Length: 416
Image (tube, rainbow, N blue to C red; front, side, top):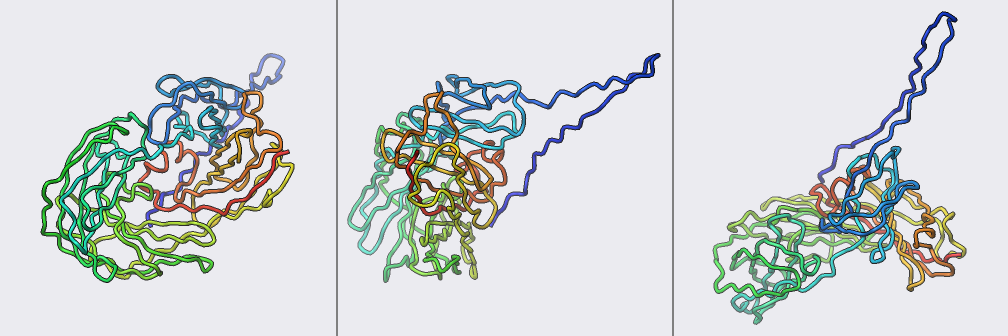
């Protein structure tokens, strides 16, 4: 597991007193002005595209993001909380920031638009093929599809924004199945492609090259609390290699032990990712990039946060209610998502390193919690980030150090 060295951004304001001696021998202290900064940040979607015309709030000051997503607010005391309010994404907040140039996500995610139709030579009986697209310019967009025996095409859905231009490569890797598991690898090919998401162009491979030699990787995954665990094999060719951009799925185990055949001899350098997943009592995953031929691999899955208050099915919850939860194991930041069941309430999504929050009272800005609204709340943990400054410097799905996430169970409540 690759970890991040802890970064502590602690500014201590030291009050200095200057004594000016006159003929009366009296002293006149001069008070030092508290340290403030100008925050010049950007509001971005999950893929780094600017989000304009949304309200940004820091303290009691508001502004509106410009066409390039930028915003500026002066005289901000550190640490500070920032909230972005969008009619499309609801409220997204990041707490405890100290940096002057944060990137604030707007909660606008890609919709999994159909993006590429990939055609390959027909897959032989007893084989499958995984087709992977990787944005090779920014690394922000990736996806994969699978082709089964006697078929020849698949549609890859990408989590980008319709109309977004991307440039990258399509990789095809064919493998043989014996006894329900991968026994070896056959054809391989790669091809550059440029397109806009939603246009659904067709990429055709007329032949696949052979010569891939299989090697094994083996080991065990362990989950805490008697959780059901499994190991999954992914192959990635992208510049971004983390728990989000893990590559294309090949196969999985149904128990804690794994012994996977992996390919060698591809034209591009392949990344071999083992993803350990725990599904009970809730989902947790940790990825490890390994080298072909390695044995004795051990991956320990982190424990998930536990929800405390408000208890499941609580009532009369409002903006004074303290939402509390346990940390789970490992370093990371918490993503508290509060979702209304209908259209009367607003979404609230808040990033914090702490284990408690309150829902901000933003009624005066048009984002009230709503009365007698049924909500659910859940806490996700992005592992291996040590501060919200880390998060706001580089979103978790772009950070190569982030190789694990955990998700709590979900509780319901009704607002006051």
